[in-house]
Structures are given as structure tokens and as C-alpha cells.
Length: 301
Figure 1 (cartoon, rainbow, N blue to C red):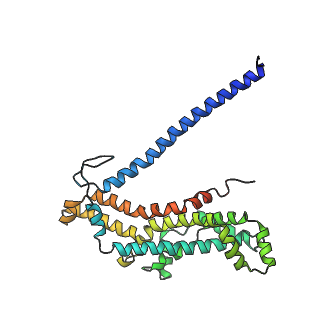
Figure 2 (cartoon, helix red, strand yellow):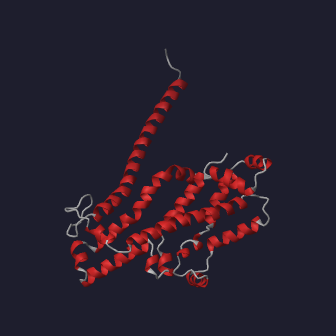
Figure 3 (cartoon, rainbow, N blue to C red):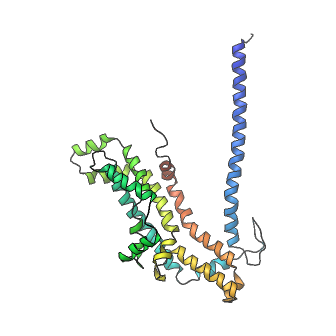
């Protein structure tokens, strides 16, 4: 049975589309593989180099001799465990306070019936582009009595207008009928917020919590500017102190235990691994919320 010209053209177009899709898939796989290698090879090099002996020559995949001396020199610091506690405490407390304040402000600004909503929004937008600067901020922190205080990690970072905008847009997508039915049953605004809004906003809250938690964990400048008491040093500041002492010892020939068993570069790489490990352990538990949260506003009906 002879095929018509239209059927022949249709079959040819299908074959071309199939071949085009296969070529696209192959190219996509190649590009994704190269992109993954670009990320994984440097990470692998950092991790394996942190276990390398100081006499090991340059390498990428495996050193000639393994050693844990770099980690021993890091954890031999008497204050490292206290700094870990400070970092964990400021991260946990900071995330809780940050989410609470940003979420209640976002919930209020998401309601068009709020008086002065445009004024509040304009004031918040200004803070996104302009700041007082380092010296006025330092004078403010000093006048508030937050120098050498644990709360200097928490109070200045309690609110972010950028994070608030993300939560506000998410709250606007929640159907008003849920709140209306709750109000008919006699629920107050606080009851609606904690019983309905917060449970439905887990993806957005987890995303903001992860962003702020990573920032709190990696924050170094706050301690550098406002903390002189070593008992309040977070992990980042403590590891910075270890690196500086290691470099000074290697340059001046002091502290034979460090200069013989470790290298300054090895200690730096070991501190990088120690710093990023908690985030790598925590991320898989928040991944499903993080992926959903990052897609906020990407799809509109």
C-alpha cells in the first residue's frame, strides 16, 4: 500500500525529531558529566589533600602518603570544641529568631488590608540598597552594648527584607478561604498563623532557614569586628586563628610539632573540610524542602 506524500513527510519529520532528541540527550549527558567533574574533582582534591603528609608532592587524586596530622593540629587547639558550640548555638538560635521575625512581618505585609503597607515596603526596599556603613554600624553595636556579647551574632541578623519578600510571596499564594473558615470558627490571627500558615509554609521556611543557617555558620566578619573575647569565638574565627598561627610558625621556624608533622596548606585544607562537613550532613535532610522553596514564584497559573 503506497503512502501519501503527507504521511511520508510526517514520518520523516518524526524520524528527524527522534534523532534530534537523541543527539540533545547525548550532549546533555556529556555537559552534565563535565559540569559534575568540574565540581567534584576540586572537592575531592581538597578532602584528600587534607589527609596528605607534608612531604607529599603535588597530586590530584591520591597522595603518596596519608596522614591525619593536619586534623590533629586543628583539634589540638584547646578552644576548638567551645568554638564549635558557639557556632552551633548561634546558628540554631539565629535561624529560629530570623525565621520568626521574617515570617510574622511577611504575613502582615502579605495582607492588603494592612494600613501603611506601601510605606513599610518602601522603607524595607531602601535598606536593600543602602546601609549605614561599617563605622556607623560599629558605633551602633557599641552603643547597644553588644560588643563581646553572644547576642551580637543574633540581633543584627534577625531580619532580612530579601528573605521577608520571599516568604511574603509564598503567603500570598495560600488561599484566603482557609483563613476565612478559621476566623468563622473563632481563630485569632496568631492561631491562624501558627496553625495554618506555618505548617503550609515548610518549603519556604526550610529554604530561608538553610540560607540563613549557612550564613550564620560561615559568618566570620561579625566575630572579627565585634568580638575580642576568645571564649566567644565561633568556629570560623577559631580556624582563622589556627591558620594564622600555623603560617607564622612555619615562617619563623617555631612550634616544631606543627612544622614537622604538618604544613600550613594542609592545615588550611583540613579547616575547610571541618567547616563544610556539618552543612554537608544537614543538607540531605532539607533537600526536598529546599528544591521546592527555590521554585517559589517560578510557575504561575
